[in-house]
Image 1 (cartoon, rainbow, N blue to C red):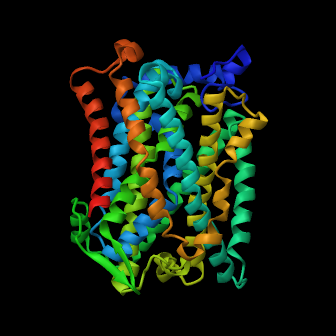
Image 2 (cartoon, helix red, strand yellow):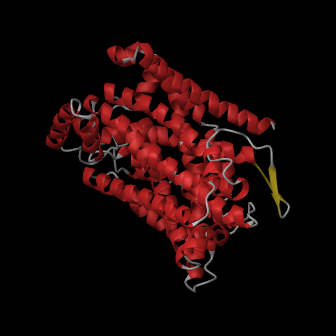
Image 3 (cartoon, helix red, strand yellow):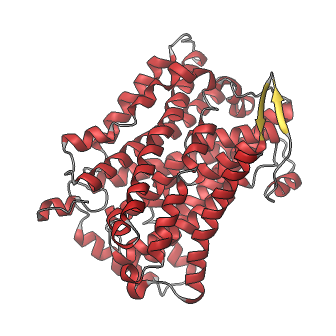
Length: 464
């Protein structure tokens, strides 16, 4: 790893490598407010926190992409309420891990990859960086596939049929490149983008909530669906089979990606957060990440069950976007419902595509010491762009492609978990900030459990 050679470069090597660091006066005011909120009542403290949260929504936006959409929609359409437990369990494990990551980052103020290289092992740090890079490239394929599919469907819905999926995919690429290359140039832009993602996430939640409220829901079965179980059924429709275990592994892997784990600590540092922000960071993970993600994914399963599963719709791996669009179309309207479904899926895919590209830029700047905005750094951000070709090969699987690719990316998580586990046990890294007693057991146990769950799920998938 290369260190910055002058003060200016050192500034932009922190956090998101923004061209201008966060306003110091604003951060000082924020820290003073947080010290006051520590002694306030829970209600007042939470209201104060709500005005400051942001990085959690960044993670929600990144994970609410094609992987979550596909695993949730197919789970509800094929297995009803039985797999409702998958996404919340996956995200709960992710929040436990990210809670540890936030404590480490905010206690030390160190960037994660250099810290992991020094205090865990360079091979593990390299492995983490490479896994995040590869995951961002692999996951780009289903994002473009989904985005192109919904654009084609939206055009057909308003009377413009026959748009080639590749043309739609290229249009998505132009937008994604333009946004990703400007993101991170100022703290104001970062905050604007995070607010946009926040509204996008909650808009999806509200639309799905509307569908659930307007359809017949068996609430007893919904509650039972949150009890972990593995249905032995294999659904076979039109000669295509889907095992429940495929959707379980994909759902758990979609909740927290290895590239999310790389992006998260940098987004904390980019906001200028420090030790005083540790309580805020925990609240942010709950309110900005766990809550909206669990709501969105669960409502997606319930809505798909109430519309597609209950009607006996034939949902296959090659199900068209228009078929899955009935989740909103059957309730809101055949035209407006499909358009809202398409726009929601498009927003999910676009936000994920952008953040994957940003993640690739981080890896390049860390490992090659590239200054922010340099040509080589920008070229690294473009590494996932071959994903734009996905509709050429897999347009038949506009949504389902996210299932196998998410399972592949899930297999990369253990290297990150191992790195953070070693950092958690390092006295040289955390010093007096290393949690002891019950807090230490919970932090270490959360990392171990998360690693065991993903490894067990992958083994079960491969061996059954």
